[in-house]
Structure formats: C-alpha cells, structure tokens
Image (cartoon, rainbow, N blue to C red; front, side, top):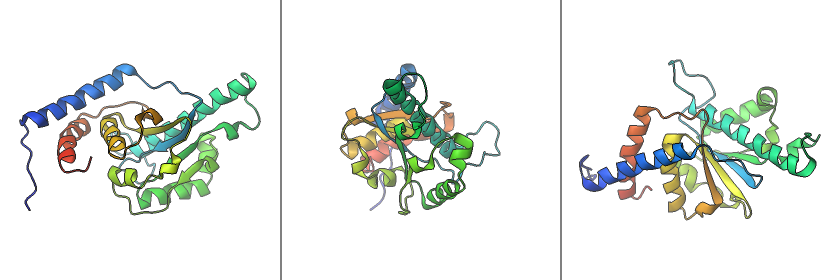
Length: 220
C-alpha cells in the first residue's frame, strides 16, 4: 500500500502546524516550571548525539548533553528545596539522599556512553552529582522518541508527586502527545525544556511538519 502523502496546504495539516506554534508560544510565555519538592523522578529524553562532545559547528548545542545537564540541575534544585524543608538553609551532610533519581533510556550507544562516564566518576567530578542517583535502562535497541515512550517503565511514574521529563523546547509538543497516546495522566507530568532554552528554526519547522502525519499514521 502506498504511503499517504500530506498536502502542505491541507486545512487539517495547517491547523496542526498552527497548534504547534501556539503551544510553543504558550510554553515560552509561561517560563520555566518552578521546582517542587514532590518532583520525585527526572526522565531525560536523549537528543541525536551519542556522547557529550561539543559540536564543531558554531552555535549548535549538543542536545543530549544539554538535556542531561538540565536534568542534573533540576534534581539538585529539588534536593535543595527538600533539605530546606527539613533542616533550614544549611546543607546537611546527607544531602544526596534528598536528590530524586534521573532515568535515561537512550540508544544503545548513548546508554553505553553514560555507563562509561559513570564508571569514570565523571558526574561526581564535573557535576558534583552522585552517580548512584542515575538509572540507565538496559540496551533495548531504542531508535527514537516513540521507542523511549513505549519502553518507559510505568512503575517509574511516582504514585505521589511528579515525573519531570526533560527535552528541548521544540520537542515538547510531540512529547505531550506521546504521553497522551500512552494514557499517562498529565497531572503526573512536568515537561521541562532543556536550559539554555533555544528554538532552532530548522528543527522547529521540521517538528511542526511531522506531528500531523505522525498522528494520521498512528505514531502519535
């Protein structure tokens, strides 16, 4: 069966792109979500990059690295809120126990890279972050965001509190639709854009064009 072609000026296709632009604008106007003590798990969605090397092209951000670093900062902010509730402004000696876990399920190569730098104590040395608070999925042949959602362990959605999902701004509208497809309660989810927040024009245009065909094909 021939794959259906979607006309760029089709009214439904146009409406989908307009919805995407509107959602991006809403996220930007809202600003970054304010951390809460009940953010009990941080799920970092990977970018295309297989490691944390800085791109050679000027002005380009390594999305995998940027998202992971944002996840680390979120976990630290949550831990700080928790310790302030428990013991005032002073950081207690057992600060690490207040840090929520970070979950990562990238491609096999991405997973292997994170495991490697965990063994090298890179998270402790560079980020002052305890690597025991990072959980890497088994290598499952993940290829794309759809696989990450399909294989995400539902038991990692907290019974109480929130699951914080980190991805780039341009990618958030699609992530929201994946959560809906997998019947995950939106009240349990916080979608947090990777910081610094950027909106590469080419990626955003490509993303806006993808969503309607993905919906029609049952991908989303």
